[in-house]
Image (cartoon, one colour):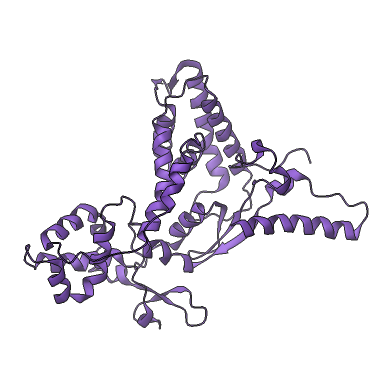
Length: 367
């Protein structure tokens, strides 16, 4: 990430150098534009298996957002508080930022202008709260929580924008949150656990797998494998494309579906060690379930084997964790993004006020 930031800085220096070489009267790139311009990147199917294959990492990534969000929702900001005013300013900034996204292809997601229009009412809610401690006529004690609830009623996309702003308002727990990134990315089999206990864990944590009907061939129409040329994950059509011999074990929902059938036909007091010796194909999913049963955000709750699975959803999630934005889908399988748009430049490093305020930065004005 540091190398990417330095490459962005180098690109601006190179543009200035080329302009000066062409004309002694060339105007150098203004600092505000150097901050606004990001580094372009793109991603494809190769990223999709990673968050599924690494559930502990996935859990840490989700917690990076969910825990500071919970902290924000518990705050009782007063109408005159600086936090509430900053919240209003950032929502206004986001409204402008998304209104400028006129050239981006966003399907199947909403366009920037559509999001901008839906954000405007939230600014009015804050103004109402500042004047009367109410939002839409209802008395409010936790303004962040109320905005989160109203955004959830609007759409997933709007809620994510509001939540992204809410977690920017309090940096006091940043050090504790960052520690979550240190996780044990390993799985271990507990051979002494009883089948009854394993069954309880499966029923408690994997109820979401029942959403998929694996008797329908469409739910297993695809498989994921290593490309022979690039050695990167790719997606193929089961029964038609080559590569099945290197299939990635990303079908967690299907594995749980098959595991449940064999668990139901096994003695409840049988040990897991005996169970997997009889059903060795379940070793991997059993080890996974046992190892992550105590972490809340370990599973993506998707079926990547389905014909209807949209890779863009997991791609956008993972890239957002990396701090990328301007998601510009080119198909159902890959998208272009921007990294470090609005971020500080080298000359800003001596000014703390410029180092941590670059969420949803609009285009520079007046030039």
